[in-house]
Image 1 (tube, rainbow, N blue to C red):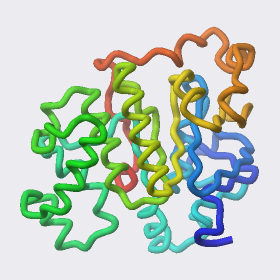
Image 2: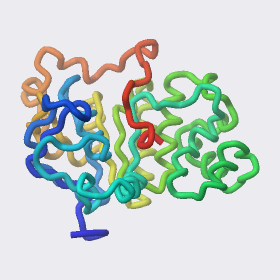
Image 3: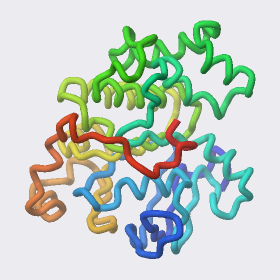
Length: 283
């Protein structure tokens, strides 16, 4: 199947390494289908393979084995130019977005628009965003949905860790990508802001028919906000079903002694930009 008839994601026996060129699998033999427009949470202890899964779906990591299809296409059977076109339809939001510290928030948000607009408008938008009222308004609406409208013209290095994380999510809201891949978006947010952020992301995805795959350490949010939850353990899919099916016994088996970890967020001082993420995808 192709186009709108195809699932957003199809994996058949897929194994993936942590980085291109390495052979040790982090994900092992995954079988998975995600329908277009579906909203799915991915949970699991640290090191379970959540980020690796998102990178594989973003066509940033090739499978070691198995068949991977995204938006009806097999990324690694495409020519490089066609693969870049496919990646323009994918949005990857890392846990700590790679935002240039001296950049204005409006430009950081609108960077998600670059794959969809021409070169001249891209340059004007990034260098003189005040001259492009339509795009600036788009950025303002996205920030308002995340309770940050007053930060539109601030510099990124003037923001807190939680504000930077919400700016990274605002990029998704302005993107025209069909598949949103969001990695632990709540780690720097307090509980109230976390619920507001996930609700804004889900509402926008629902209204625009986007597919949302979101990794979470907050098990309660995954169970309460998502109709479908995937659980990874040691790189294997051990649960695929409704959040209501994740009872205490299943969670104990999944997390073991680290059961309390998914309910907590690391202090802001521990959040550092991730190395090695593909900048072309972290728009």
